[in-house]
Length: 381
Image 1 (cartoon, rainbow, N blue to C red):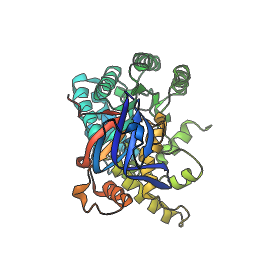
Image 2 (image 1 turned 135 degrees about the vertical axis):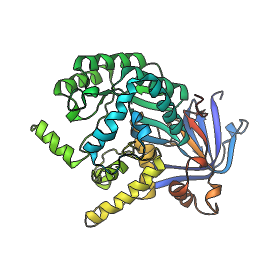
Image 3 (image 1 turned 45 degrees about the horizontal axis):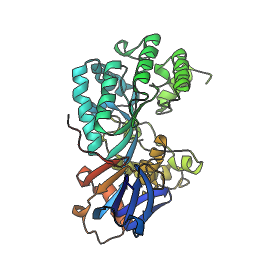
Image 4 (image 1 turned 90 degrees about the horizontal axis):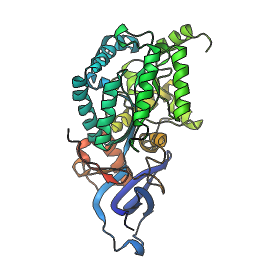
């Protein structure tokens, strides 16, 4: 039992979206960085081992952010009175152009990685910019931090400002170089294919990126049907073929319909169209938007529950990384320790405590963060 860890506390997670699973004053047994068992009482075979006892604190899975733009971090809270295309042209593209400068990129990316740690985001899926060297810098900082992520160099060779348009062959060459450098460098930080969206990528570029995804067995991230104007634009280009949504007037996703049809769903902060790098904040707005959708659908699509959005921000998004986001047997032990004592009386149910934390807690309530069983300290850079 050399690689065995035991944690004790009030354990909360979601095996399914429909309900929370609770172990009050329970134990999590972790072997070789993965959950071995959840128990209400410790088996005799483990009683001689040391226990990390967190008392009355909450133990929950780490948060998973499925979509954020690293080079937009400095733009948080800016331009959110615009729709998508004017926002891109007025704020986003000029900011992303700055990431040609390694010194500037280092300053912003260090702040971003520290903020991910601070907010309890243990895994994330990240858009970088078109720039090879500073995308590599982002990889290196994330690897150094101990956080988990997919990182993609953005590809775009049309319908963008001239200072952000790539030549197709160079775009592919840079992408291959990043893939081959980082494919097997870390078990936590991996490359992902990242065409920005259809209007900014020619069919030839998209086809070659698809070939790379197949060759290297990589996932793909992009944007799809975000905004009614974008949808019409794509129809013209190709006749053949969330908080950010409210901030940029892009519509409300029918999450209830997707869940009922078995479509995997997770949550993303989508900074800087989203204005906070906080998955609990995204959980809040997701419930609120589902209530608006409920009214808009003549009450046909029921609002989302707290357990459902908690699932989306942990196991739902975590599935993109494999067995991540839950405390079921065989899952990576990614966890947050929550001290909610300052939020009010703790003599209430665990379900009420987790809901209260989601709505009125913040990063100051997170006292420890674990990824694959390792305690992750604040990045020192």
